Image (tube, rainbow, N blue to C red; front, side, top):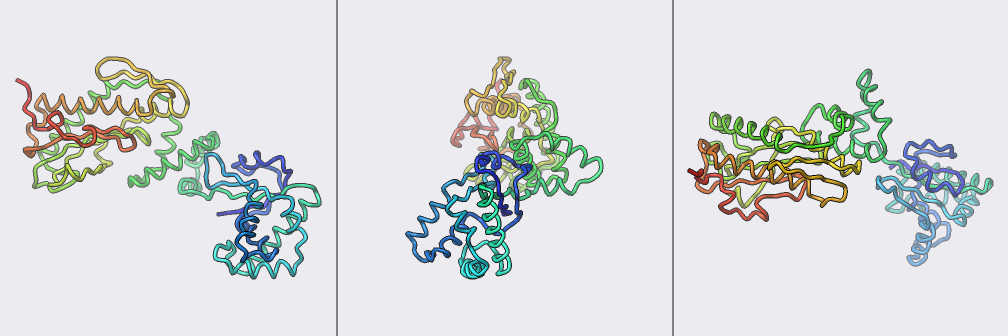
Length: 386
């Protein structure tokens, strides 16, 4: 973890902590090997208290008296070194630095990888404390968030692609940048080659103000009918053997990362007792506006108008129950499966005598049937009404 030593006025603590892009005009020594725990060790060695556990804990409380983490980025921290410790370090001699470096390096949790790095880092820390003492300023230790996978991929772009990303990236706040990192990891885990482009699409497309689940339901019906025809022609279960009958039909959805519906067929003998949510990217039906709708009320604090599949209207706001939107979508998918079963759409599938249906959200608490209690309502091979 990169650690910087800063010399700045002590009343700038909060501003320096929030300065993600490191634009402050503070005196900075970058990428040192002096963490807040190393300062505790250095002071304990200097006071000959490294093996005195009660004294060590007292020093730790003293050094950590003003230490905070960023509210949204846990890996970013800032510590203000107490004035008594600053002055103590400022008075260390070159001989003290070499002596302390030897003992410091022998500790199991020492940050420096070798003797020279230990000497150089401690000498830099001493110089910063001396400057701060002379100018009546504070000494800060700042850990910077390491470059994540998204930022590394971003840094490898060039030309028009880089210009497009830079235009969007420079407008994002810390929360959006963190969201971009999470989305990028998600798409990469799905094996998608265009993960970076998908992140840009998700965070720059127009915001959705309303969602019509009745319209979406018609699209989903057509998709399920298509998948059924394909399966009857060439069985290709999501889980299990194509030679066995279907024991579980799953309809999986997501709204948190991208918005999709995925239909699965499970032929494993233990399908009901070993529920698995397996996603096949090539078979997913995308509903990007579901994710956009989620962003509207959860991130932008704006209401989302929802037309339910039964024709009624609803509004999801930041004050709504946590899973309200998930429930509207999940219930629509549940009713879709039940209606299609009743109309005989599953009749040509190779269903087992006890084949059931299941609906679930991959990043939500929605699941039907509740608690996996499979009953007559969720049977897939129930005879249609006359």
